[in-house]
Length: 298
Image (cartoon, rainbow, N blue to C red; front, side):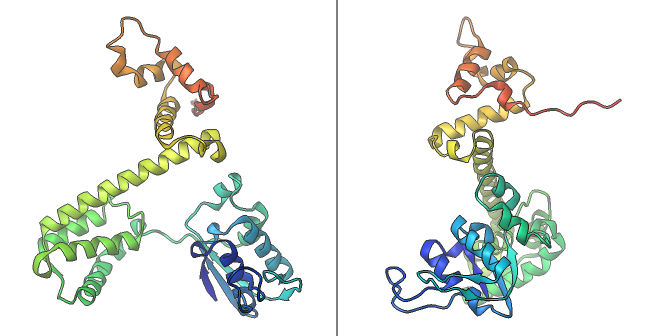
């Protein structure tokens, strides 16, 4: 049995995993046997296990350890003896620290861990998958999709380079080929289409990197709960200030970098004081943001 945990929430998650009795919640017109019960004597695969809520995590932990659980709305235990395989693209150890994933469940399922390399780590897979995607596009678009020799060479050079992050793995790759195929006249992908797609991919990845960096920097300093209380506009600004402070040698050095443009318009400036007052708005000091530098070894 398998389920993508990112596609289920609330009562739906509880019901899908543990089942429910009739009338357990609005819409529960008939009893349902959950996946844990169906997996009895077999294997249950939970994809994106990090997306489960804390309540589901608690019930799953008991089901793993004691082989029993309660269906939603029932006071009678169900038994199920199954092997669990879980997958995630999240860093669960980080989620544990942030209180988003139960530490006891993480310890229980972290018995054997296997890293599946991303597409960017497997450049040898890109060329054969390009051929596969062209065949797929042919079937989906209803016309023969091909690439000129020059276009194929240019795309493969980029796709296997360090520039190509492929953050969405094969989803990114498949979408890139489909866009080129759709926008190419007569089903023939040429170098112009490849150049446009490379520009589109690079721009998309830069935006995503900046967005994730913004969230991680602010949450890493203030904690997720306090960071979520800050307006998006202020959060982006604060993230930039944090990034500068983390690489600066001193409060004054960070101030000079942050206020370089406005300094030229003032007769007297105190960059350090301006930065100190800005950080105080968030109950922060420069010392809170300093990243310890490794000591030199002799």
